Image 1 (tube, rainbow, N blue to C red):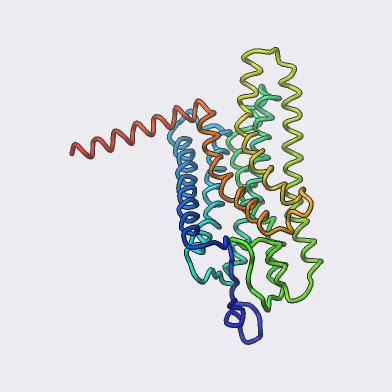
Image 2 (image 1 turned 90 degrees about the vertical axis):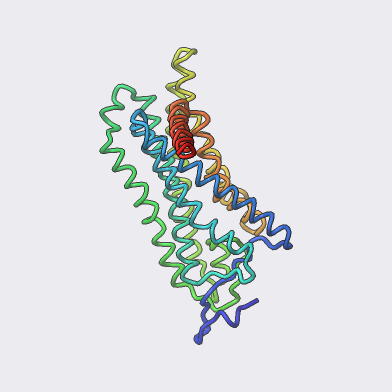
Length: 322
């Protein structure tokens, strides 16, 4: 390990080593190709959602504006850790600077917090549409929608300021090897020169709080939605109400299902392999599946995407002819 050459004169760490996925040469190439392919498809899928909402006037409604912002968040979210992970897979050094590690932690988990807030706001939107349909146009205005978008973005980044400030005060003097593919909280604090139980408790509480509060809020909104839907006579009305929430509920299940494993499953944080797998799932797989869920289950989205595809094909054919 390069612990001696990565410390400065005072003995504090200047960089960390992200061990990532220890495997042989051929396996590394396979992982690099697989993760690169998923990453590119994730960017393409979420960009298609943004383009569909932007290009179709029919989709200029609060629900789709929130969805477009959510897709942009997913692009930023997956780009905060995957490029560095891909670089480290094929790199011999696998290093990240001290500042780079703190910034990666801050941006990755800030966007994770923002995702929790966006999912809560989107559930609030569905609650109004189903439980307060007559008041929906007057409550969920474009002005309120813009305020909620700003709240989600700002709230996510402000929420992680306290953990970032506390971690920046933790002394690291070696070893500097993090058994993970990103700068996660638990493996990072485990490298502290001295025990920091207070900082660990505060950071863990702050991180867990936004997950559980937003999850409970989403459960509450879905309980209200379910209560209203069950009162609707069976038929097209009930089916439409369920289909309206199906995509959002699937995304919520994917994201919170994977995140909760880290906090609910006893001892899951004690196994680096489990930590890596679960983090990889909600860091890469969830943003990959989200646009697929929304695009394939939503008729309006499919129509908008077909129009974009037809325009692209027409432009391509026009270019070949010229």
